[in-house]
Length: 366
Image (cartoon, rainbow, N blue to C red; front, top):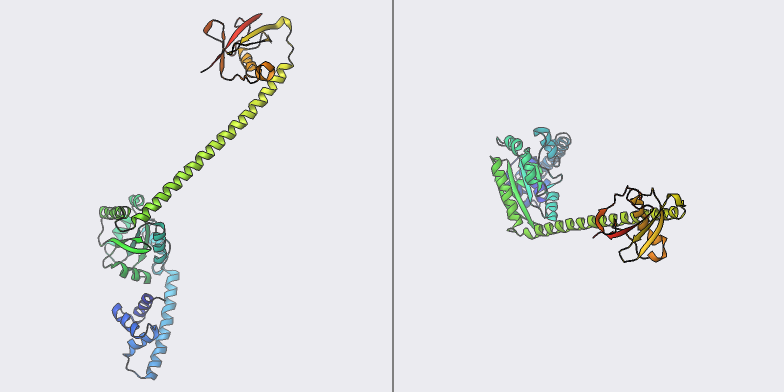
């Protein structure tokens, strides 16, 4: 148990708010709580036998106090050290502030590690300004946009043991009370405080000003914040790079699958084309002039379409040895000496005047 805990325990048992008296009595008793309580009630001048009786009585009172405290902690959120958020919601409704769930020490360590300012809210139910502050500010949706993600927000009732210890740290003497701390090498540095009657605009200005001070590094906290921002930026860049890599991987995989499908279709076309028997009565002889000056000649049905002729040209490198390495992909077919005349793919060879024979020119698209 820390010295502050012993002081709080002493004050609770002897029913006094004189912290100085409690500390002096404990120091004179070498921080032995039982001996300090014994001295307080006996004035250090009673007999040993009487002292033993009082000591026994005080021990019973101490056990009784602990039992009552445990009961109140278990059943009443108001007295709990870690359930202020539950108490707040049950009293004022849902809050826009994300209360840190944990002790003050845990909140401080989290703020220092995360390189974020720590907001301390000390709640006193009997203050005339408390209800307006809780309903008008802590339950205000506008506050969520200001505080969420930028601060660690810790709150406690000032009547609790932990609340009293933090009250001394903050120097609170009016309520509601807000203090903001930054951290340098895990050491808390107080940025500012606001307490008493707190209008919404004053609270917003206060928190934004404190945040600006932290980010500008006025309190030595800026380097940690900038490091955190750099890490977050690097994390975002890494995440974006991973997304782009995944996108490229998917595109490459899709391209490979498309190529496999295209190869299968071409192979099927080649096999079908080789097995065709075109009767002379229904045939046309087509001569195709290629971009390199060479030409191909083949027999087709009159009812074959221009589209079929283009598909045949796209797999010509698989049909004819002289076309090996000359794969045609992006091209159109035209009549000789008629550059502006293009065929519709669904037209038959007979419809476009290529019967009983004809010549077409392959033009590569740029």
